[in-house]
Image 1 (cartoon, helix red, strand yellow):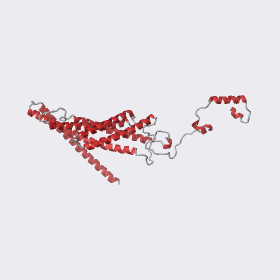
Image 2 (cartoon, helix red, strand yellow):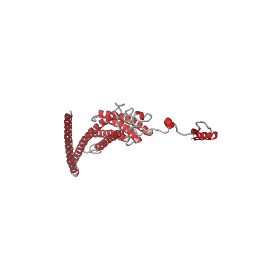
Image 3 (cartoon, one colour):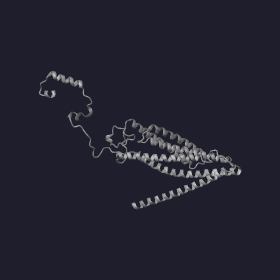
Image 4 (spheres, helix red, strand yellow):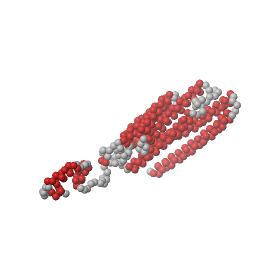
Length: 340
């Protein structure tokens, strides 16, 4: 059974390497085309202005913007696929962690800490990818011919309308990526290793606002690619924000009550945390088997019986009782015990 699986893994690695090679080749070709068009544009800019030169200059500017747009579009598509894979694994882990009582599996506090660190690194990686996507999306919005004031001969009303539509789509995409980035940065602040819950709640609230604005902007775009799916993704993001806000508020409450960890990853059994705001993390054990060794008082016998119920001795009453024994001077059979 292991040989077929290893062969499949090798095939997947080979396909991934081939795909990566083709991607890099295409990226290099775009860079070569961009450099050629840039050189042509510089040559036209050095010529004396005229109707033909202005027309060629404008066409080269649009061609340069188109080449840069296609390159950025390819980079953004690749990054979107990477972040989509990471987000799916993140959702699966969140659903597993919030799936209720387990089947008796136990995990040590060290394993719990490792899981928390891995979760933080995964969210951090997603946030970094959205940083790169946000930079590319802002660059797309300011490309030549994208409504930034580039004009030339032969521009009519239809071209202006297309430029306005392009700018609207670019700005809507910027808002969408900002909402997603803000959500994952908020989750980074809400992590146990950071525990900045006020900042996390503010970022999550801002993410919900940006998601609503992005959905409105995407709906306003007539021919935006995958517009309906993007609007639905913003609706799903708002649901994830609400869940993250609930988790953050719960973690903040636990921290304010003095719990050892905001998400209670102490790993204690149920009998050891009956009076604590502690979920026990991923350990769902009722008691330790075999029972753990615990220190207990042995002498004197009075404290064995009273245990922790005796808090403070009535010194005045004891002194009064001792003085009365001295004055009475009882000589009974047990008087030597009272004097001692």
